[in-house]
Image 1 (cartoon, rainbow, N blue to C red):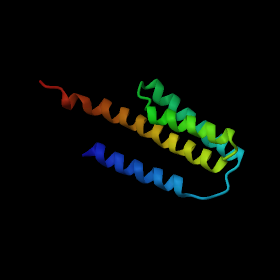
Image 2: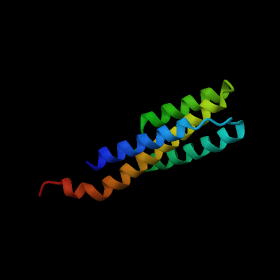
Image 3: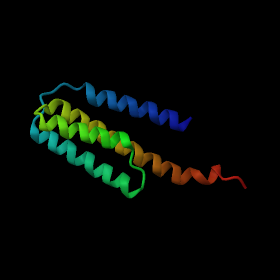
Image 4: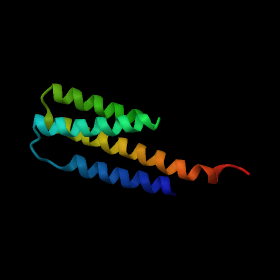
Amino acid sequence: MRIMTSIIAGAAVLMALTSAHAAETADTFKAAYEKAEAANKKAGELRNQWTTTVAALTGAKKAADEGSFDSATALAKKAEALANASIAQTEREVKLWPDAVIR
């Protein structure tokens, strides 16, 4: 149940992030991308990087290279949200796994 709640909350955050329509610039993209990369690096250190995060980062970089900073920034924010969700999952599972062990 907790996992489903986390997934639903994550989806709501993603929708909120991607629905904002502001004229994004290269600077806002760069800031968002750096935050996403930092979160993804932390997820990697925890050995729980999601492939969807990598795909979002790749898409963000491609969109930025094409000059579409609105899409690039939205994808970078999505990647950050996914990376943060993977970090939260790891932290939650570290605490909960003993309950799943048969004794």
